[in-house]
Length: 116
Length: 115
Image (tube, rainbow over the protein chains, first blue to last red):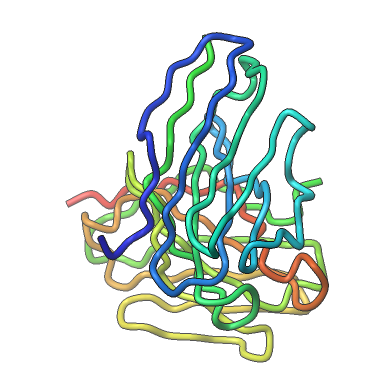
């Protein structure tokens, strides 16, 4: 596909379980971003990758959250010991490069995470 | 600390009229601004952008105005169409440093265009 692909589209989990969210960026895009949108809120930045390294992890809410990117392509966001406040839509985006006029970020449809 | 604010949660406009969506920011390091549109159950879609060296950028029915001294930008849609009904997000990025790629988003404004 030509766009950013995220899986699963919906995830329901029990409090305390770990979850993995996957993002497949647009081919050729070197930068990849994770955001989340809680109910009624704007998009909250979590982390971004340029290649396989993460220059800015400042948005990760706690050490239960981690992300990795391998081969400059697919990224996985992992949430350990999920809490109810982790319930949100997790959005992934990619861009040609990070920053400046070329930082047009293209978004996937998101993963809706519900923690019961 | 909300660095990008969209103070109007919603806006209702008649088809054919102008829609004006507003956005304020506080961080003077922001040098690039973007507007995204979002339909339910879809990811945000890029609409239009503007660099801080400009005060206006136009693309078809969409025009973005930037007033740096007031730290304010606005999106004008003329004429508005029912298909424009969506949530509109303002976003900003700051040049330089490790946060170069990060976009800071406003809370969004729900635009409804009535036929």
